[in-house]
Amino acid sequence: MDSFLFSIQATAPVFLLMVLGYIFRRLGLLDEHFCKVSDKFVFTVALPVMLFRDMAATHLRETFDLPYVLFCAGVTTVVFFAIWGLARHFLRDKSLVGEFVQVSYRSSAAILGCAIIMGIYGDTGMAPLMIIGSVPLFNIYAVLVLTLEGPKASGNLSHRLKHAGKGILTNPIILGILLGTIPSLLGIEAFPPILASTMDLLARVATPLALLSLGAAFQGKKALGQIKLSAAASLIKLLVLPALFLPLAVWFGFTDSKLVALLIMLGSTSTPTCYIMAKNLGHEGTLTASVIVMTTVCSAFTLTFWIFLGRALGLIA
Image (cartoon, rainbow, N blue to C red; front, side, top):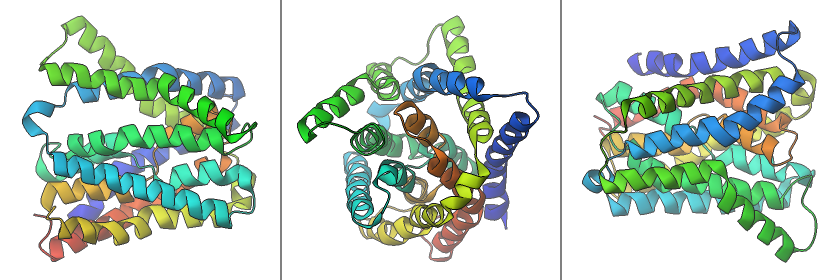
């Protein structure tokens, strides 16, 4: 019961902010211009600052566990390319491949992950190492698939790969993560108070602004037209991936906070960043928004189930 209540407390505010965005749009308080401007601001400023701050606060030199980081990176890579291959084969509308792949593998690792692990253990535990192993790849692979698959994909494969490579090297979110590792590796404990406070304020804007924009741009009728795809992506995200890879993690000896961090990486709600990334790389975003809403609602129940199962089997203390 405690796990369920905690999952509800973690996901309900996310869902309610999306609902408020939808309501504000219908009341005329938000419009399409707001969505475009806020999406661009979150993508280029707020999210990179948030990820830079979070990475800089990670004590990499003290907590680094190479086998665990490599496991996170390896699983992320296998999942991404497997889903991409299946999506290219089975999806009739090829313009939706990029969006479908991204929301099927990419989790709210940095935001929801830290919150849930802190709720269980009192600190972020192994979440920073999971973030190091997965979040940079989440973003690199997202740029790759959204650039190569979608409405603006044109030219030969070589041209598209060059375009994707440029997108990866100039992606603000990826740059924020990479730059954040520098002070962490150098052992810089804190920034000057004024700079730290400014970064905190900008970082706090990222998630609520992204959620309000997502809700404001949500198109119910179009989302209903893609309900089967949304359900398939949500099923993969919340149930299939944890069922396939958590037993493998246990076989490798990962339990307690390491296992919970992997659960978040594999089976938590699709991150709102998916929507921001899809919109900024030329996709419509309807399928992405629909899956984010669906996984946010359902993840309170599925995460509770996985945590309960882990505790029942003595794998999560």
